[in-house]
Length: 360
Image (cartoon, rainbow, N blue to C red):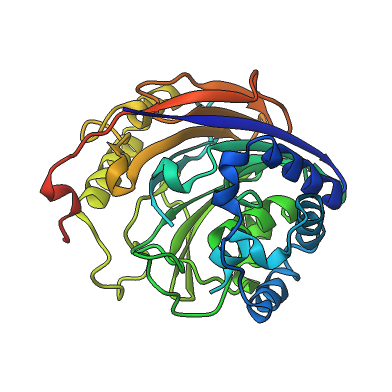
């Protein structure tokens, strides 16, 4: 068993002030610095190219990065954020649309599966002047891997095939573009509905291979499947939609499907077809694989890092750090706070056998 800290951080002010706040937070935790600051700086040209890609969609992020670097007294080329952006993990997620006759609201659920060595383990509520208030999981401090904004728009993602990145073991990008953590933050800060988000993402150059899942306060939902720069939009057909880690819209994509992804997807679809309650769906997300969707294989970068339920109509989230088998779930409203700033999380390792990674 391994133990690590998880964090909640509330950020308020101008983008520059929010950047300084994150630097002050990091300076109080010097052991985390190597996670966010490179020992070898990225080239100035690479930083410039990444900023040009981000600027139309994240206009305030440069000010936030500037505030952070000024407070840390470093150059922006030292940021891991730019290194990982210049061009991630497995998950299960679904949307069950509301049913007025059954007095049932729309819910989105997600498990995020990866490794504590490559995750912030930090939930942030962000109040940046000029952008929508949102609460979501941070990635490399400045990106987001999921979240909900003040309009009820909720966003999650799962890898679709091999994760894209510059780090060893990741697939080099097939196209020049942004990573999914830029896309999710841009959607949370500037969109109100699923349709707003679909239009924005269609305009963005995206290098990540992912399923981006969306749900809003009106009960609309969609998944945008992105593979090597190509984007295909799926819509719910029977009141629900789901995704794990293999292509579902692009039938031409070959060699991207693992046994565990098919098992989890089939499990999700079967449960959704039975028209479950949000409580029974939550139980599926909280049960351990293969009976459920929680996985504990952290050594092979496939352990549950968090489980989240979004309720767009209420503007609330139910959030669990680490495996829900071992940790409690907390409720909060968008823009609100958790009852702690730091919490110890346990990671219990388990191997699920050779069939887990088998190609199908």
